[in-house]
Length: 72
Image 1 (spheres, rainbow, N blue to C red):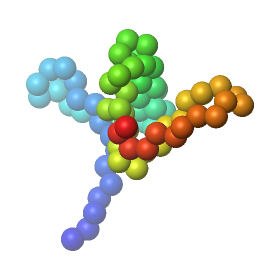
Image 2: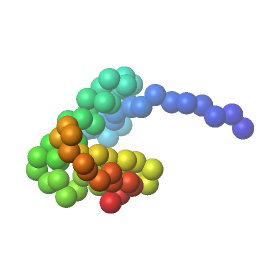
Image 3: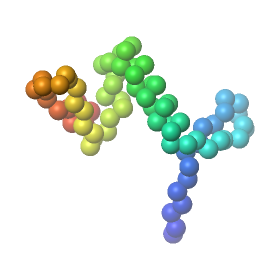
């Protein structure tokens, strides 16, 4: 069996509409926009952006902070 890598696609709003390829820069932009919108509107739901192997550190320079692992 051979594995084929596919480019990410975004489906249109209309059923049956053709998908279009999305470049990595656009995926990154969409992620950042959703992440920061949620961080401002409902930070308690930010865990949804992280998986079991993710790490997150937040603080200011020189501050001792705890690292969050996974979906803590």
